[in-house]
Length: 171
Image (cartoon, rainbow, N blue to C red; front, side, top):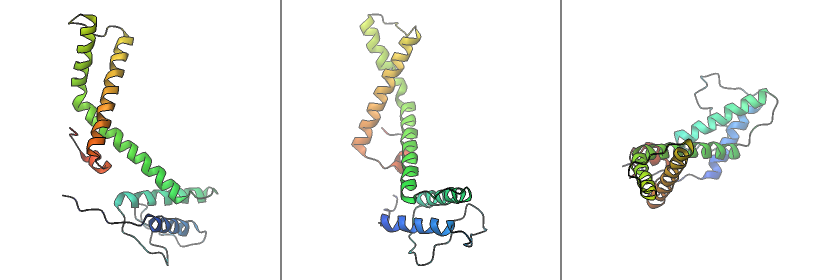
């Protein structure tokens, strides 16, 4: 069982990140010459906070982008806004990956249901989509049913995105 996540004061976390980014963007300030994957040292007079690897990676990425923007003569990114944007993109990607795993598991069953309904409607037990339009319509129905079932699964279980990203079977 995973350890519970520590309580993190988001305001101080974002303030620390902003200070780190600003300290790295000041002209004439000493910049670390270590490998680009390493974290920047904490700015003086800023309380450091233990953060997850994902949060640290996001802050490092924002710092890299701000360094590129500084060299190009552009204003720095707002750390809080950029952090939220990156997190939303990663969360959306995690949900989409979880949905694709869910679809891979359940798609054949849903296809069988859609075809069964259409065969009953057509009164033809061997009916198959023949035209492109029929095939696209059936595929649209299958994806809609899968999306609805996936959304229902999330509402019932309310897993975190970390669980979704690591899960192999959702149902």
